[in-house]
Image 1 (cartoon, rainbow, N blue to C red):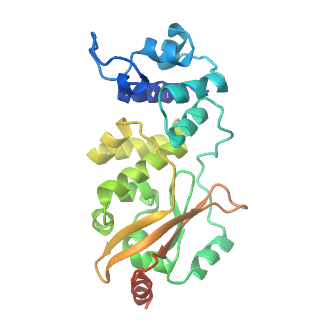
Image 2: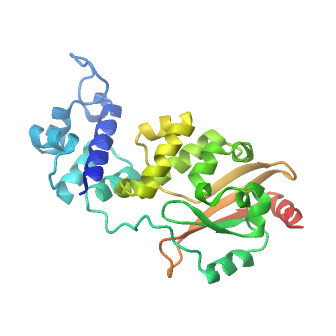
Length: 273
């Protein structure tokens, strides 16, 4: 593990420990507890590891925890599947992670986006830079083409562009969901210059991002229905899908389709003209 991964692992474990009520694991809530959550020695006891060893883990010491121990900590801390996966990736048990380098948009994938017609779609890199989109997406979010290339990042525009804040029907929920999914993806690469620069700038630019980032919350992506408030056609109910091309694994294609039972297909066609 890199020093950055060890530090993130330490902070993540500490944040989950402090959020877990003693009663949730069968411990009394009273006593001389000066801080919320479990004590380190309680986590160690419940997970079957030594108090000293677990303390070292939360201190970011250069130790090599086994997969078995990480699984035991995940069970003890009642981690969600996404949090468990994140823990494994941080500790080097989650498989290879993609590099933070900005990937180019292959011409054949741009043609695929264009072929989706009235369904808005765009492509992002492993660092969430937006590198391609179709006409339908530009009609949904006209500002994408005007954003300077250096700032054309999904997380950046979600947290800093007033037009996106207005467009997202549930900005508070949607922005927090983007943040937790981003952190789950890039956690082991937090030392990459691209990620460091983005996070540093967002912490300076957005109090909402700063607060959400400090929580260390993570989550998996799941296809779901999202609401948009478009200034021309009004409310759009769109299903949000995410795909990884087999021949370009460093990219993700994000596609919005009209939700079943809604009039959004008609409205998207009207936008495309």
